[in-house]
Figure 1 (cartoon, rainbow, N blue to C red):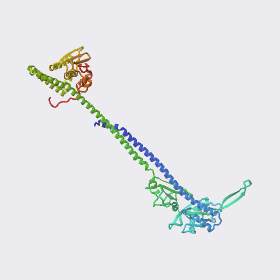
Figure 2 (cartoon, helix red, strand yellow):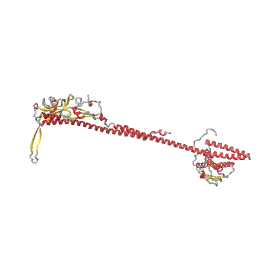
Figure 3 (cartoon, rainbow, N blue to C red):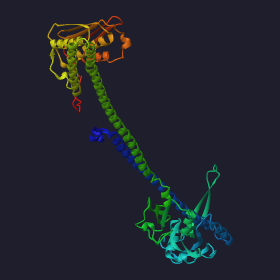
Figure 4 (cartoon, helix red, strand yellow):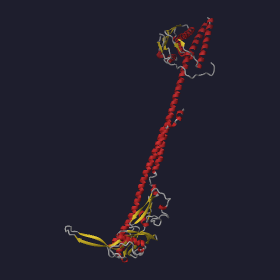
Length: 583
């Protein structure tokens, strides 16, 4: 197969495949990048929601403890004295793990204002004096029970300051961590205290001047400070009650100071916090301060393997191999189709070339068959007739027989020369043009040779109205048509007389051959032999026409007409066949 035209510029043929490949890669990368961005935004939002839920849960539980301290403060504010059964009932409610998990201590500390010089109604001292608070009621989770709270814990400056600040600000406050009296798993627990101020309550009622209202106005006024209620909470138990031990999508580290370090780490899980580990990596992580009452805590949140397992960040990367695979598949199919079309085109070109060569071979074969039939075979037929006549003359006319044998020998030499020219493709068609008179002479010689073989009357006439020239090819076709027509008259029509008329004008040459033979039906004899077909083919090569006028019982008239100047001469191809031996 000839692939030269394809190999010179294969990219041009495969341009659509290259375009599909490039476009597919660009689209795949663009889609993958966009999906990656969207997935990251979605996962970022998911992470932020989880962080907000975590922080909200911690703040909500601490607010629950704050409310417990405030409720206990209101409990003491409403009573001048608290009986032991009342306190035990209150303790039972506070000690319920379902209501306040992680609450380890609770109690009431009375304020001793004798240590200050300020009026009882207004307390502005920023630092609590020593021994300002005395614990009146206390409870600690077993085994400490009702009297297990350290009575001196409020003597510590940090604890006293937090309690004193709750009275000054009239709001709940939180202290730093301390060692609690309660135990967890047999060891003293660490926790922080939430303080709520306890004030005396005064109630005044005044009747309205407007009798139509019929209502009394009751206004509560905070009196002098009595003390503080406190709740101690272990952060580990608090966080465990909130989140348990189940793996979560995000983890967090909680610090009780805005400057995180291992000392203030409230939920330690390793020797060093992840926040301080420079080698720690996660999909997402964030840290920020959170406000817990009067304290500023710090939280570090990060994603866990569970978050990463359920994350969709890896899914966009699946688009990349899938898109590239699909692109390569489509490109491959298109390339295969293009290759098949190129191959089909090459096969079609070669098939057309083979058909043309076959047609040329077929044309050459027909030419050879035609030339052999109209030339050598007709010459052999004449020799056969001459030998038959020689046989008939031999008993009675020896001299005539010897003369006829000489003619037979000359005819045989001429036949050999004709066959040699045929095999070497070196015939008269390469010669110079001839005059009309020479053509007339050639036909006359053919007529005379035929008359010497058979007892038949042949009359030949001819004239020209203008000088005319014939090419060697035209002369050859003219001779072969005349020889074939006369041979048919002798062999098949059994004619007794023949007439040939060759005329020429400035533009047309006409040959008429008429016999008085038995004639034939052209419809019945079509395709039965090569004679008429060969004559028709030669007329076509001459650019003229061949007319056959015949019917059974009234002879045959054949008329060949063609232009004096040939229209096109394509009898022979340029390629010649050379025999390997002398003929």
